Image 1 (tube, rainbow, N blue to C red):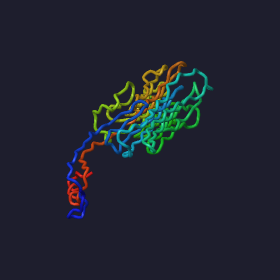
Image 2: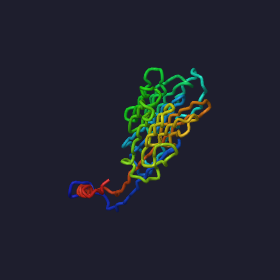
Image 3: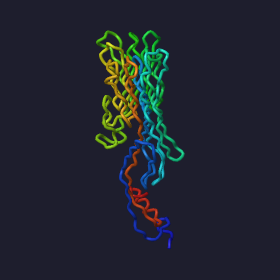
Image 4: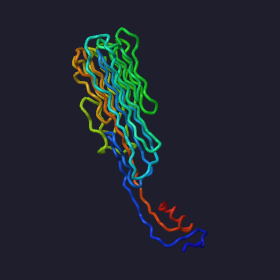
Length: 341
């Protein structure tokens, strides 16, 4: 029978305490589906990364913008509960339409990534498609997105600008060089703006570098970790915990080099090859933007953006439970000891 204790608290039967514990777990969702929490989880830390934008085509294409990257430190959830996640694809690679100055500008953005925890939906915005240019399409600025695409080939036209990024998710793309206007801008990254194209004498010309991605090691642990993405060919490093790097901007011959993709899976730009040789797509599941392509011949294929990902961290938990009713003194002592739940 319960009664009043000497210290003023209601006390019940003497029941044994039951310890509980749950190890930390980090889940990487690389495809659309459901994520189910562990039984004791009440909140999660989440990084949501959208698909990266397509690398630009044309005589000289800009770098694709990285997918938006949204980190949310704490969202309330229920234990042992499934929650839906949608992983966005990268902007699709495109085929050079041919030597036709009236062909449409093609700027495929990355697709949004989201996860829904009850009434709360966390959404990262797809990366902006890169700017394009003649002879295959009209000149186009980089498109806005999670991070903005880099500006395209702008010879003989006013300045060509990079697209705007989304606040708290990404950065702006770089602009096309001003003199000459043939070296395109790099796509923006989650951790930095895309580089502007570099003009001037031939030896110093370059396409703009892709913007730096964001380092997630402070949230999910130092490398190596199995949920960080392996490096891809012709792209900025991603295995070190970086995600959402911008694509490098291409340039017009006879300049020496295209822009490098941003660390975090951004694709490198092509290096003055008529078939887009040396260019790279954004690395899958990093949200990296596609590298810009210099395609003088029709029929070549531009680069695509990298698909997105969701990382979810459930913290380790431990303590004790007790089914009985406790005196105030016992509550106080357990709270001081850190064992009261």
